[in-house]
Image 1: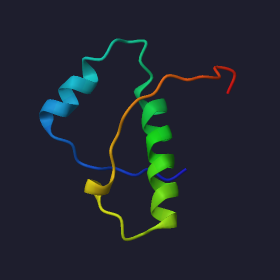
Image 2 (image 1 turned 90 degrees about the vertical axis):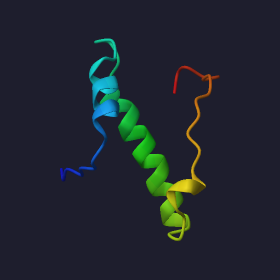
Image 3 (image 1 turned 30 degrees about the vertical axis):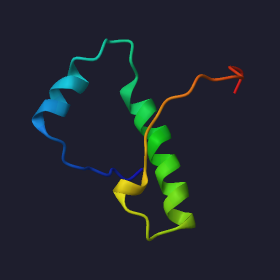
Length: 63
């Protein structure tokens, strides 16, 4: 599997490291990246400002 890296600022890095041990940050990032890639495949002219990240409650927890 290829690795993709992106720079983040030190404040963000520290905040990620301070997350509780039970938080699987990489799982969140995989899901977010998949969503971004799907949208960019549909419209490659999108820019970062075209995206809003929000959370929702799951209605069907079996998925």
